[in-house]
Image 1: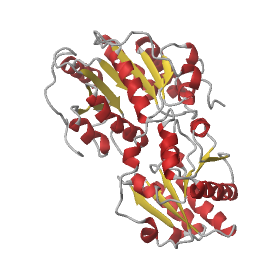
Image 2 (image 1 turned 90 degrees about the vertical axis):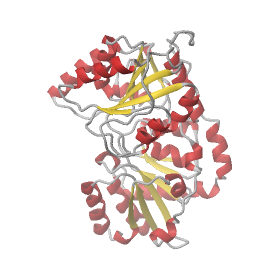
Image 3 (image 1 turned 180 degrees about the vertical axis):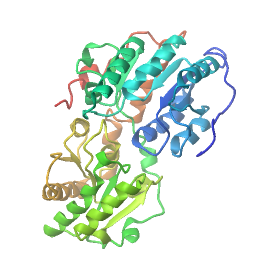
Image 4 (image 1 turned 120 degrees about the vertical axis):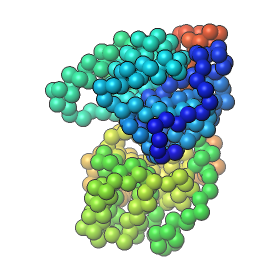
Length: 413
C-alpha cells in the first residue's frame, strides 16, 4: 500500500471489552523498508493471534511503501497519516477518542514525550516510549533545549520506557536508566522463517562473480551513518591482499548516497565489482548466498544488518558499537573492527569472517539463534506482557524487568 490518506480494516469500537481485543496505537515517523519496520511487521501476526490489534500513526502526510502498511491491515489494524505540524495535537486527540486504544506505543525517540503527553491527557492506560538507536550526535543549543523539554514530558507521561539495547536507553533516554523501574531492554525479535524463504535470484549470476571470488553483501538503507562508501576501498584492499571480491549493496536507495558509492568505486578501480540492488523482499535468500557480510555503519542500536546474517551462520564484519558487541556476546560469527579502522583492517577482518561462514553448519546456526534472547518468541511474550498487564483480568501491574540484570550493563562503553 503506497498511497491514500488512511488504510483501515474493520470498525473501531469501544476500548477492550467491546470486541475483546487489546488495541494498540503505534506511532512511527513513516512506514518504509528498514530494520525497525521489518521487526515490527514480523511481530504483527503473532500479536494478532494473541488477541492484540495494532494500529499505526505515521507522522507524515503519506503512508509510504514498505512491508508494514500491508501487514497492519492484513492483521486487523489500520494506518493513519498525521503530518507533523501545528494541527497534530488536535488530530491525534480526535483519533484517540475515536480509536480508544489500551496502549499508545511511540517509536520517536525523545519526541515520544510530546505524543505520550497527549495520550496521558486522553487517559490511555499504557503509554510506551521505545528507543531504537544510539544517538550521540552534536546538537545546536536550540535542539538541546527542545530535546530536554521532550524528555521532561516523557518522564512525566510514560508508563514504560523501552530500548532495543542498553546503549539505546543510555544514549537516547538517560545514563541512569537502570534506576528507573519503567525502563527495560526489549531485544528485537527476528523471524527466521522469513530469512529462509527462497529467492529466484542467484548472486553470482547477477553480479558476474566467479566461483572463487568472494561475495560480500551489505544490507542497510542508503544514509550517511551506514557508510556504504567504505565498501569500494575495502574491495580494493582485498585485491591488494590477493583476494578478488564483489560487493552487493541491498537496501532503500538515495541518489546522493548511491552517487558517493559509485564515485568511490571508480576512484578505487572496482566499479565493475560494486552492485547496488536497492530494496528487496528476498533479503534472506540473498544473504544465504553471501560468503561474508560487511556492515560498516557507525550509528546503530541493535543492527539487523548484523543480526540477520549471524542468524544464518554467515560471518559478519561490523564496526565496534555497543549493539554489535551485544550480538557478539550471545552469538558467534561477528568480527569487530574499530569504527575508524583503515580499509586494510576491514579487508583482513573480512577474510576471517569468511572463514567462519565456511566452517558453520546453517542448521546449527539456526538452532543456536532459536535458543538466544533474539528469538522472536521472546519479543512477542514481552510485548504482550507490557500491552496487557493494565487490562482488566490482565497480568499483574508490576513492571516486566526480568531482563534488567541480564542486559543492563551489557555492551556499554
